[in-house]
Length: 377
Length: 209
Image (tube, rainbow over the protein chains, first blue to last red):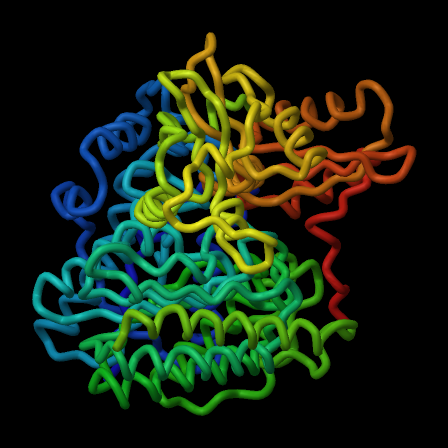
């Protein structure tokens, strides 16, 4: 049985009603699953301790988060990415962020201590948090902390990041770690936040050749995405032979996402998740820990993550979505709730230079593999 | 950005009496292509790997042997730069004269060297990404106050600008590329459009059907 980790306290990780990173996304997704007749059984984690956080973040950074969290004043907070338009201060932010880290850590423990195979953490995926800087809605790097826990217990980790933004924090924190391979697929930093994730960012020291980035052209569609996904991931996993996969399953590469410019449809996400589960079976004896991540279209995120839940549990995929759910969240969907689990086909206007985009992505993946494999053999 | 910000300092230099063979070996060893030539502390020339190879090549009527001297091949009275020169000034002079380096002088003393590759590095630094940021590209009318209108729009939203690059486009407009310390560049672009800015990136997404 797959394990699903969730705690109502995750809802407290909220930067305010107008902010993109809304806890409603998970509420809507859970309600969709319940409305479809699934009883979602969740395991409740403990929040991470201060000591857990200090495994990755510096004391002086954590102290500032704590002070702001308790309503105190930190004059230089903007230097640490705190109190900016992206990462506003909110009361209890330290504890709220520690809950999400605790969930990821609990997932790691279930895999190592209880021999669980498929674990889904319904939150987190805060891949932008750097050692000492909050960035892109991320305060503490739950992923890096959970990955360190796994490697500390002897499991080598392949981290796959399908969020539309580069997984810069995870990459940077683990840049020289030979026990961790990171593979990030994202819209090119030339165009999208955070600006990094070029193919030449290959890791340093003993970790050289183990940090892989596939920067994709804006308006990349599913067919091209899956082509480079297949080109890069199995080759990398075959080389690295990880003990477990950790997957940041951001849903913001969807064409309806308001923050970014990739054009995946729900069917593409289905294909991505099926591949990842297949690779887990092939390379890591089925062991895989998923977290959520970005995903700022309520309609897309709720459906992509419901899809992930259903696939992890080997449950059949519904075609139509329940009326009760559609009407309950109608206002959130601007009066146009999605009628079906999958997007209509085609879901968006035609992309004029589709061939050129696919060609460039293919070239980038090829150059990446040429550069990385230099360190592999 | 000034020459002192991008130059290599101190510069590796050689005496005019050095043999061509030794000069070439020095370049190989240090991984460089340009050597200022100093005679008792005074700059008397510059020699490049291209000078060396041409001087000893059968392409020339009477090639020198490897035991020839640097003073026979070097370019005398080279153009120089000063540490306080603006980078664009140096780039212009190097481009105009088609030369690959300028020795950097201070009060008659050689203190460094700036090469075409250093200028490329400067370009990377000016356009590069060293902090998490998103791209914003705006076409502005080429009028006084337009850039200020854009930057004050950003400052009112408490948004940090990490870098800004502006260049002329056609007769009447400039293109301005900014890196903004925010993940929310599309929301920002939409607001800028509402305030009558012509935003080129991020574009409006192809509409969902």
